[in-house]
Image 1 (cartoon, rainbow, N blue to C red):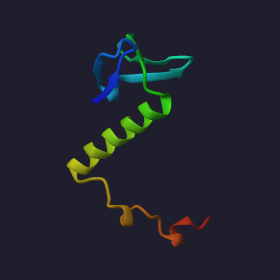
Image 2 (image 1 turned 180 degrees about the vertical axis):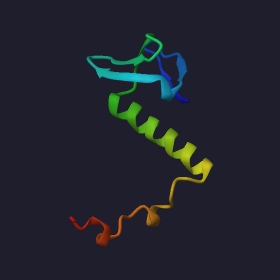
Image 3 (image 1 turned 90 degrees about the vertical axis):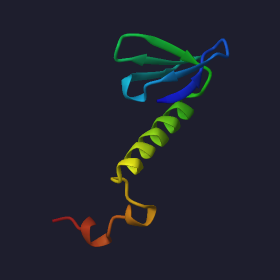
Image 4 (image 1 turned 60 degrees about the vertical axis):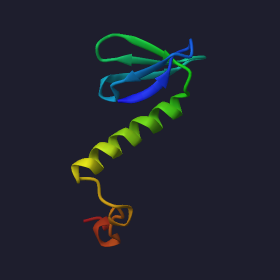
Length: 81
């Protein structure tokens, strides 16, 4: 879940897993997989950053997100076969 702000400045918590589409017209509009639309004050980039942070927290809590130094891909594995 990510916390965002509706256009009327009311906070809203959105299930990040339900975001199907993100549009940035003058307003940032989220279309959820339920068909509902949510207009928020945050920029599209900020919404994406919050979704990424949310998913990282989930993976870290599950123990499946490697530490930063472990995320580097060894150069040998980049060789084209």
